Figure (cartoon, rainbow, N blue to C red):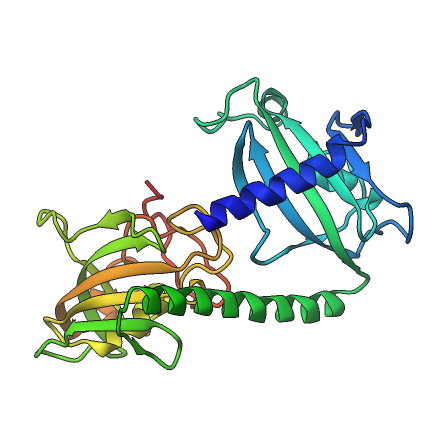
Length: 323
């Protein structure tokens, strides 16, 4: 609830900063509507430079995305080509500027083809508010700043997790990598380790609400999820935390976002999501030999495609999408 309130607060602040000026929207060459609030100080961004911004994206009265309270967004500046995208106004922005861009849903559909997502109607307007926090002339300066922000984000994730565990009086073992593990039963069979294929029943929950986003634990018609430990086939928190168990083991993994999907939207459709998994290690066997290996294993539903920052290579393609 606090995070939702934060999204709404920054939304109100950024959009109010523009609306209170009575300034009319301007149009780019492609027809994109925009407003910029600027004190006119400093040089506008140039092609090849990088903007550091907070972003809020809204559809009607709902906040679709906000970077407030987490990692800012780093955006390269290109020429103002007429592509019906916020990138058109980036060369107009200075450090400290605020801006709002309005994309019309029917125009997006006409220009780029395809069907609109079911939650977007043809007459909808998508508003995107930007606050320019900094402007970097080189990628080296951007990288140094992003590394600092990444460290801050990691610290926020750890503090949120540890606060939750403390408030709920949950005793855990913390791995060297940073997964928090409750060992309900360690198991008595083969140890989970690199090179072993494990079969797992699980229930995935959003943090901190505990809302279930996917499970193969209650429906016995669903096969256990299988993967080879240490082969880069799963998020790091699983690969790391399951090593606390043997065959037959049961417990819970509390996984900070940097060991899950990091900046990629996770099962809750937001970046930087901490996650909770209740797990049971059904079996532990030797990994299949190369000649016997099937195609890459299918990830549990709710686990997105692509590689999150810091996630091992080898993420399988074609797995189910979020429900």
